[in-house]
Picture (cartoon, rainbow, N blue to C red):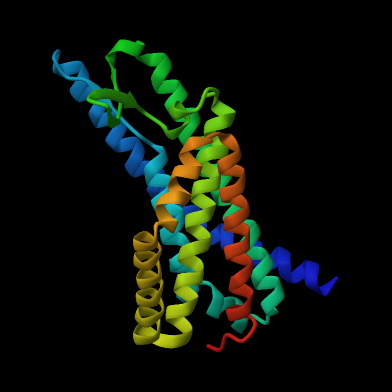
Length: 239
């Protein structure tokens, strides 16, 4: 009973904190889209280009880092247990990722209906064997590029970034700027070593050789594992 009450209270506070930030975020994105839309109507030779998914990845990452100093200390002071905080933030991260993915892809569908396919300028350009290929979403690389597929892709990427920046923020909070920088420097050195050893190249080739929606389910699972690591820091966190 007490655990459930704390979980509900923590989630209520988290979503109350999110409401204003989410409103501002989508207001800015909506404003940019409207300005682009009007500009495209006024300029006959212009081509309308947009990508709503990438900003949602950044938003999730920033919010994961932001709540370390702005949410956790308040919840601890209000008497929430470390376990309740851990569970509520995890649930919040998943809901935030799915919500933004649904909103961004619904907006993208509406814009695609308003515009003919030929008038939309794709936001991602790749050159493969001298040929330019145009994409507007990572889902374009897959055979199935439905609304649901795009939501799964965006949700998994957003939650992965949310988890990584949340754990990164906890490391900085617990060990200070110097400790955090040392930790990330060691991680960067490990990546360089993996690159020189050919491990990184083999890993990337393995991903893109069998690139499918399964990769994003796996990415979501990795995000869950990364988030689970945060409990090691939360359970001993002091304010």
